[in-house]
Amino acid sequence: MPSIATRIETVRRRIREAEIAADRGPGSVTLLAVSKMQSVEALRQAVAAGQREFGENYLQEAADKQDQLADLAGLHWHFIGPLQSNKTKAAAARFDWVHSVDRLKLARRLDAQRPDGLPPLNICLQVNISDESSKAGLSPADTLALAGEIGQFERLRLRGLMAIPAPTDDPEEQRQPFRALRELRDRLNRRWGLQLDTLSMGMSADLEVAIAEGATIVRVGTDVFGPRPSPAAKP
Ligand SMILES: *Cc1c(COP(=O)(O)O)cnc(C)c1O
Image 1 (cartoon, rainbow, N blue to C red):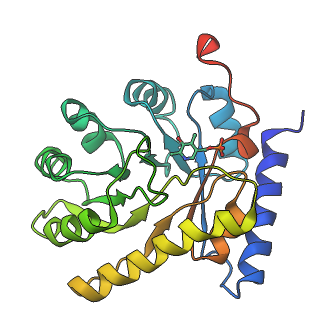
Image 2 (tube, rainbow, N blue to C red; image 1 turned 60 degrees about the vertical axis):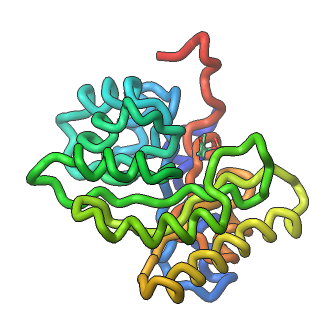
């Protein structure tokens, strides 16, 4: 199996080539290494390879890893999993970003629980862009409404939108939801006079198409760390 350093180098090259193909500047896309179910040792290898942004889906697992990596400075933690209202305190205290805000109640609690002394919590609204009833996220209409309400929260900084489109191998089908998310972001900016700069979209299998459609954060797990251990073998 290739080392994590080699995998990261390969993903970074893919990102760079996609930036060039889309006429976008170098470094305009951030690689978020999705480290759910990966060991602390795997994260250390990624940090040694220059990776600083990490995405986690489970709060307890993330807290354990953050404590074990407390000797490392400059890491940025993004919460990308479904968030229950009664778990917002840990998300507000331990993360720099939450990508999965999908209701006003979550925003209100994250704002109230963001500790003094930390900068505002960066948030994205999660949008159900492929319109599948099984998928989490706001409808475009509800996204528009909620974006207009986030401004009242002083400890939150609304940065943009996140989506997890239904997987497909067809690049043209991949493109459609990414484009729709970008257009929705642009609509929010016009409607509310915002400057949302973030589109969190694209994973291992479709990051090139996402970058072509304006992704600024790609969330990559498998292609950075290799296959995830099965839940039974979870560290
Ligand atoms: C697991 C996960 C990813 C990474 O998926 P890969 O296919 O392993 O790259 C990205 N985004 C979210 C929200 C995830 O839960």
